[in-house]
Amino acid sequence: SPLLFTKGASQQPFGKSKGEMAAAAFHPSKPFLFAATVKDVRIYHLVKQTMVKKLQPNVKHITSISVHPTGDHVIVGSLDRKHVWFDLDLSSKPYKSLKYHTAAVRTVAYHPRQPLMASAGDSGAVHIFHSRVYDDLMRNPLVVPVKILRGAHAVTRRLGVLKVEWHPRMPWIFTVGADGEAWLYTDV
Image (tube, rainbow, N blue to C red; front, side, top):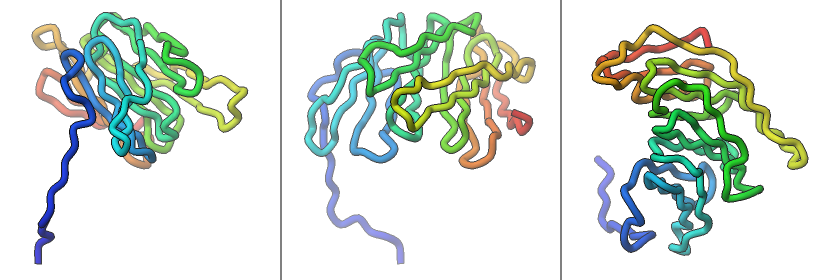
C-alpha cells in the first residue's frame, strides 16, 4: 500500500524574504537551511526557527551555493565572475575569493565524498578544483585548480553551463548547458 501522509507539518523559518532569493541548500547533518539572496547568505536553525549566521560574500549577485559534506564550508557563485569560499568556523566574511572565470559563474558544487569542487558559468567552461578540507582545525583548506573542461557546451544567448552535479561516489561530473545538452565527464 502506498505511504500516506495523514498529518502535514510546515514551518516558516523567516517571515518575509530579505531580498530576491537566489539559491538554497541544507546542512548535511544539522537542521540548518542556507538561504541565499542575491546579496548575502543567511543560515537558519530550522528547529529553533532563528537565524544563526549571516554570510557576507561581497559579490554583486549570488547565483548558486554549495555546502561541503562536513557542513563547515560553503562556496557561493556570483555573476561577477568569481566564487567565494567560506569557512564557517572562522568568519562570516569569505576565507578565499576565487576568480578563474571569464564570465558569470552560474553554478558551484562540492563532491559529496571526494576532495573535489567544480564551478561553471557563462563562458561554457567547467573548472575542477582539488579542495581538501583537513580535520586539523589549525590547517587551512587546500584549493588547487586541476582541470578546465571546455568545448562541450556552446554559449547560447550569452548563457553557458547552467548546472553541474557530481556523481554520489565516483569523480564524475554531469553538466547541463543553455544549449539544451547534458554531458557526463568521467575523466575528471
